[in-house]
Image (cartoon, rainbow, N blue to C red):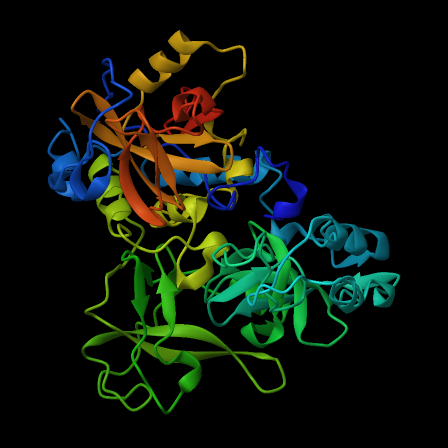
Length: 480
């Protein structure tokens, strides 16, 4: 997401970067009156009890936690609908072989428009006009040919997606260096990209992935033929990362695949026929899975090499069944992870958090909250300023485990009901509520947290419930 294109009201708290799909569970969350002023709970979070910080507590409330919400065929149908109906999703296989200059320039300018407000670097210095002009020159728009042949590549290392072809980190104010306004998102090993342009300094590529278009460092992409790239991982067997992260084995023999971070939901092909007694990068393979991973050669070309994924890592041989239990278990694997705007800090933001959860089931979601919240491919309940308290309270009462709740720039996932409140898990940079003294408490949560919905305040006068813009869920369609 480009934060410069959002109004202040819609600018994400966590990056409107990621995901939207509401997964229908068998447990509806009942409604009851909630006082707006209460004392502190566990660790200073309003109403929180220590037992709420585990998935088992919430699973125990479910009458049928292992009910399959969507089976593999249902998820395939949902993903097909997402690709057909949601304009934020890009079908790379459907791209034409060449793009006109106008098309390429338009795609870049849609993202890389110079900011009008003052920004500061990591040392608190104002980013000057000359620096901004340098960024603009590095876009190399004047070098875009009349027609561009689309190239294809695989991402070989977890890599940032940037607003401009630069590693310069910029911020809204001096001393607040958490949210880098040039950070858009991230791609993971094995992700497919279409390459549309190269920066003037030759260090960056402008790419389109399935869910995002932005700048990526050239060193993180191996370029191959269209058939080689699009065919990668098209058949199994596979390993799917089901932990928050997993890491390949350390190997000095092949540093390109040594201790490589793989995030939840990444699915990679396995070399099932690898001889049992043949070492993989200096290590016998009996205690691991032999993955086939993409690497970048010195000339920028793509190669596929074996790598070991230790069996101790949290992975599965296929996407997990989409059940209420698994939704809760997967979400709590991120509990306490630091908030990372646009997938900064090798972590994720609010929409990245829900995206990775659902990716572990094979469910495709848009990247940003702004796209997730209004996706026509999901089961959307929309709210406007004309919707009153009764309508909003009823929607909260009807929330089900796995439902995604959107306020401007933020997404939260419903996990259950306790003490007359609806509870959520979400990756948030902050939060507030009224304390027992009637004053609003400003909490610097700054990570994946468990909080109640009803007492949460967006301002002194507006609650989160007042600010709900959309509720999304995934469930079977009546005609399927």
